[in-house]
Image (cartoon, rainbow, N blue to C red; front, top):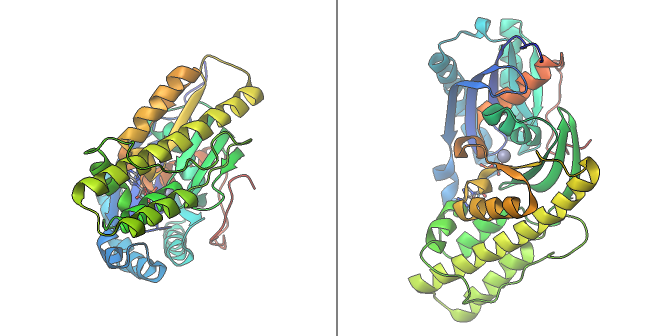
Length: 351
Ligand code: KG4
Ligand code: ZN
């Protein structure tokens, strides 16, 4: 039996998109960890008039909000900076202005406290969130579906991921948001579409299922959004029942694509790791909050002999706890980053 590692306590900061978030997490790999605080301030209302995230507005809002969010996270955890083992912040990928705000702030806290800095990859933070919530062992298959990302990969160890497929155009959350806009729904559109779709049965509109049956595990969603646009433009103003039917058909098409691509990735995973009894799929990212998608993934896993791990919704959407946990996993392996660590707008996990 493995000796229990000494628990570590890490402050995590997340500012790569439109959530200003900070959290204190305690624990040891493989988890689960204890979330001592998890403060998330959304900026949706600031971006709503524009129908999507405006990078400049997001960066300014992070500057205004972050100090207070960090102070609140420490206060709720009932800890001072001196009692935290490291400062972790998302260093990319994401909107560069926001990433800079969070990373520079963590650097300042690291200097002030004399504690190490961990520059966290946002995608890795999502990937490891199932270890924070469940203590999941490697390897596992990860479906990361959010507003900015749509990927399938195997997670083999901290820092070791193999990309099986990614979107060749829009991320799935982006498709939800753009479709919502076409249907006259406010940003962020994912939860709005889900609510609207729950009031109708799919089957009225014939929407495409891009990439189904294709070799590999890549995704494509822009054709689906375009098909919705053509229907909206061709039919003029849509009544409530029409919009619900279109939302239901859009969501059904997304689910068919996701399920097909997940099955393809499961095949690749089995080829790489053999067919074992403890194969696990993790679904993370904001879109994994969708109940219809969760249900479809559950069925797929049952049919394919995988277990499904869904981190709680609060850990699926952007948050500081997953960043703190990713930092904690690095720290436990003896890794930290220099104070001149650079923010990165693009930062593929495989590199
Ligand atoms: O992970 P996240 O909070 O931020 C990014 O890193 O992008 O994901 C936000 C995305 C948005 O596109 C939002 O519309 C989508 O997740 N989303 C949903 C649902 N809740 C959030 N999409 C579909 N159904 C939902 N219930
Ligand atoms: Zn995210």
